[in-house]
Image 1: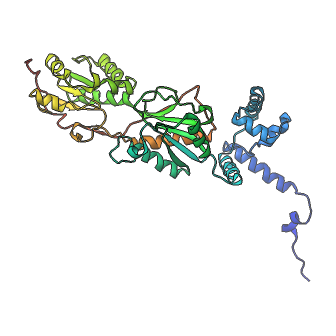
Image 2: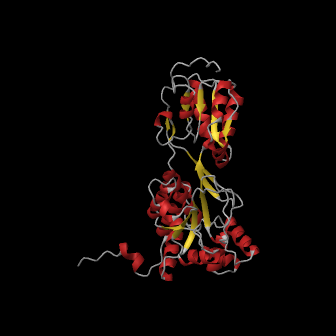
Length: 385
């Protein structure tokens, strides 16, 4: 009679693991250490056991929830740091979804899009802010969020009602669209929400923001025009544009001129965008290249009898609709809004709410297009007339 082998089933017969099992665990641990991977994940429960606190208290303290004393939060975070605790992002996301499912409503999965433009206007394809709203909505949906357009500028909407609308919709964070006015006067209890601004037009409150890299853009345009032999570069822009970009374009232009010299005329700031001062400025300084972000100077130059680009090259930092021949950087408001939603989602993941003490600014810049005939022979200075 042949006997049935039992050696392979020793672990299931009630026998205690032998040295072979212990050696395997030791090898796994050593291998993980050699690879720089921790062999085990420290749990929130383990931190609580060290401090005599519940798991829920430790988790809330690590998130910095204000219902706990600052001393408790500091103590928990210090212990977590001492034990080299690192949360598992996949477990964190799963627990958030589990809590939402138990609550019976999708709380905390809706973002708000704050704009001082009315809904009917913003939904029009030719509205300047339309692409921003579309981009934010697209990216929010891709990340699993809803996006509600908040018409806070609508007449007759008292602040108390607006706050109720926001809470009832379960909004957890805001994307603030570019505004026509530089300050938002809204009592929204900002400490309850994560918030990100698109662009630089909102000066107060000061939130994290995603904006165009205006400084790098003007420096790169200057570099390219200099390479093409343009030594008398002039900068022309409206006072509104200058203020909206926090004077970054002007600062970059002055820095370039300080570093490289040249024969740059004074910067021309057009009040209200009125091009009338351009004629006198051009006659006095005869630039062979004009960089004009956000303002179309070609008609005014044509009225002076100056040909573009034969007599003077005109370019810009941001490509202008209807003027592709002027070149510049492709700057998509839709792409900017998508980046803003990415930053907002990251803040929500880190449970960062309120007006930040240390602000983040993400700068975006697209591909560059050369203006027409930028490399053409440089014309001699025009005679003043």
